[in-house]
Image (cartoon, rainbow, N blue to C red):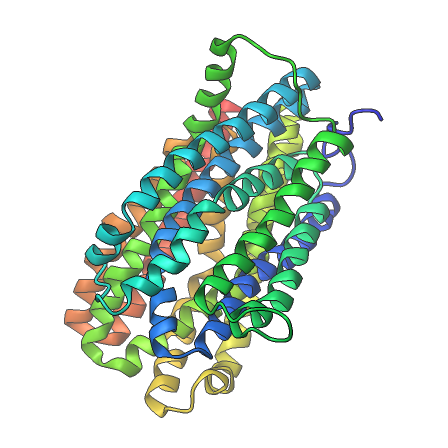
Length: 447
């Protein structure tokens, strides 16, 4: 079978190409959300202790996932450029070396993770009552971590070819397996043993193992992007440097965001439990509202990479320009919609009038800047591919640490909860505007 890792994104109408790439990614993103919600739902049926134990695992899982996503971003960036250059041997080398790097990183974290479950989770505040439950889950999760990390890198390599349908189909398959096996292994239905939290962990590992097998099969047999030819270690190290140069800053920015959310939650908690609940629900609604832009950002990366590698610079500029305009138009449409339906949407999640009021306040203030936040998301994605990862990481750091944290404190002191949410809208506006001009400058001097 011929190698299919060819530059498929350097021809055809730019807008149509990006649209065709984006819709499968939207489905894939929502599938990832569904995967986590399924676990939470079924474990919640076991009781409060089990749900609390699972909740304690989220920060650790999030850090590992952030690292895996960073590696994936780095992998997609370097492979898409190599595909655009038409260098298929380079594509094979980078894909293979990226997967080897992912396996080595997993091996390191599995060893460290298994030895530090107790101290890490005690540091996070887990009580002696919850630690046995946490250990029963994390021991299995750590041992199956290779099936979580490697497919993330593999799927990004597949996306680099311009194929977004296969990674989304792989993710949806995992969601289906999770939905079927979770109740069987957690509650011990039929011939299956009742394993409770261990059952949830085993289901996650098994579902991810399927994504592992399919991703490797696609890369090795369909796309012929994996090579068994041994190269000097210096060549492998060079591949790793290229991936990590982009991947580590990208992973760092993904870790920063939940840390900042933790700080903001602490500020919001001063206004009571309903305010915290409203903030949590609003953040999830925001993710769904911007899912299309997040999906577009993930497909804009291989589009820019292939066209930059192929020297199609006008297509790069046109793709960036069209994506930015789409984000602004989408954000404005969402703002108008939420201004009208904020209250009925909020009432779906909770009946407490204070929670509903908090959600409505957030949606009507912050959604005004959703379009510009989308511009920042798109810009950082492109900056990574243009080999400017520290510019991308700097934008996120500037927005979330230098602006959001102090402005949220100031807004809270001056205007209460309205000030906290207003600060976020201001931060989105400033961050998106700055990102637009920074990317424009980088494209002018780099592309």
